[in-house]
Image (cartoon, rainbow, N blue to C red; front, side, top):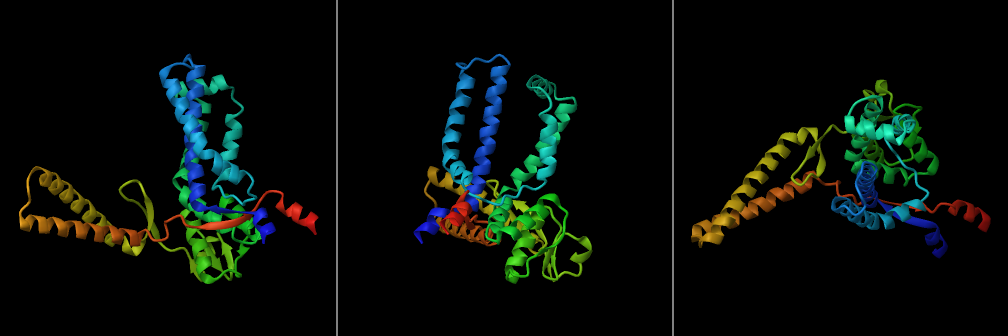
Length: 306
């Protein structure tokens, strides 16, 4: 048992999302710092020092997660990875000076390439929670099956992958996640497929969902047949919050009458009820998924041990 624990790591979808957010911020800050230093700023300038301090803070938070992922032998999934890699290769053919000029002038072939790549990277960043969920899902499968599905989802084409060994609810989860990542898909005759002709005849299709953003920037998927109910509840949350804030301010200025105090309490109860209803819509969006993965080199060590 102890040997098994030494060879494996538990990875969570929450850690993957945090890694994505922190990595992006680190890259943004490093780019700003380097660009400023290349274009005349000094290391002791206040704005440069401020960026460096924030960068150090982000790197410190990122380090433990990055170290954990570095030693994990994980299947990763990056939608449109091939397109992003091809654009990166083309961009890297330009010199640093040419790229800096393109950024300053916001024109030219290099700038257009950077813009295209930025759009794809941004799309993946916006989908980070579902990419994390899909990554965890694939790492709970036998390696061969997980890699085959990852390739199919990344490339958007390829042969069907047998998933008949999965329970029906897991097949549905897989199809829903792939659809959220922009892949029209289904399970047909026990296999995960991107063949559009099979979707109409498939036994398992992606649930019709709409991506909605709630206050605070949280993005949740809502079943298409409950959109009007969701929007009505969001409207109620906003109206109740505005009334509660207004009455709360008034309460600080004067003592409320008995009737006003009772109404205030009722509004707060109704508000909590509406928030609870929102939580029901957001069920399954908690980033609670985990997978047990081998450390890099663990398979080789395992072979050597036997």
